[in-house]
Amino acid sequence: MATAVAGGLALHKSGTGSTSPPAATGAAPKTPEIDRAARASGVDAVLAARAEAVKLNKPDQFLAAVNPANKALVARQRTLFANLRQFGFSSLRYERLQEQYDQAITDRYGPSTFVVAIAMTYQIRGIDPVPARTMLGYTFVQRPGNRWMLVSDTDLDRRLPRGSHQEAWDVGEVLVKRGARTLVVVEKDQARLATSLLAKAGSAVTAVSRSWPGGWTGAGVVIALDDKIVRGADYTLPKNAEDALAMATWVYRSLPGEVSGVGERTDSYVVINPRNRGKVDARTLAHEFTHVATAPYGPFAPRWLVEGAATWVEFLPMDGARDLAVGTYRQTVRTKYLAKAKALPPDATFFRDSVASYPLAWLAVDLIHERYGGTELVTLYQEMAALGQTQRERDRIMMEHLGITEAGLFRALKAAAAA
Image (tube, rainbow, N blue to C red; front, side, top):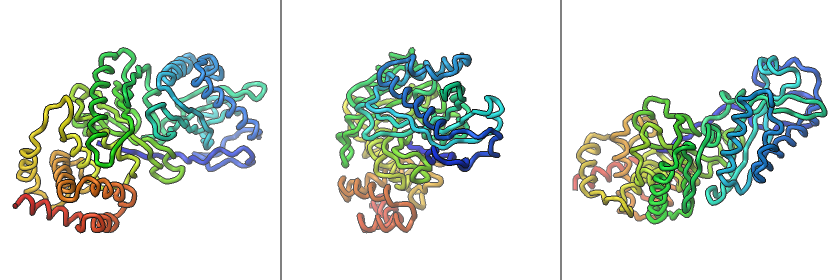
């Protein structure tokens, strides 16, 4: 399953020379005139020092600007530092974005209050193909000498975009373990689970690299925490909580709202449903890593192609996994689901009727691969993902690559079953 959720803040970079406030949330604050350039310089210095502290393993420097009177904040930030150190960033920086006005927050902390959205740009060594971006929200107040103190790291949480916030390093003490082209994140005391998931993830990475016709040399991140909301995965939702095993959640090179409404995507990290953790095997991860492999193609492929391709790879022979009776399954899908269907599963209702949608999606991709070959399957996916925003575009792309529309593909499935 793949998911992505955009959100709501304005993300323009906070100006340093403006004398009037940017577009704001709520009424403008009743504060005395501030030297915005000096404030920007002071906060930027704090952010640069924190990024350097992570790189050089300097916890005191990371915590230097944190309000020492707020013991809970200090504890959270100390845990955050310890978590960040485990991930092995090849690059890390924090960038001040748009100031966010909230009179209630100003009333709480005083007239120098500065609430600002922060972009964290990072690249995990051996994992991220290009730098990725995620969001934070910080509240600062001024101290003597234009020094700025972090007084809250949660005031903006409810406004930050879902799917590009609440990272694995933000949700309590974690343990990070690496394998070849794999990285697993679990609770601090779950070393045995980490070892098990590393083995499964290794098999899954090998399977996708070998089986996906487009080739894949990337890496897989598996997040298996007790928290039910991590990144774009929300396992508090009833349907997700009951049925989903894992989700491939988008990783962004530009945040939602910066360049496009949905953001520019570069990769995916897999988040496991804590309720169904024991059901996840190498095939489950192969399914999700296929989403990871295809994430750079774009966000617009039809759901039947996205999930059908992932399920197709999941069902192929895998080292260490029992071979599935694919021929028998194909016939079951034809008689049990295709016979009742009137079209390929539409995007809008795909997950609502997932029991039938996934098998039908697999059957469609299976037929494409059998009749047109792996290269055509991949090039079709790439163009659909990049350009398939409308049914007209999808049919144009289908005609160009296969000589049939989506409706024609469904008729071909019916004809193959009848034969």
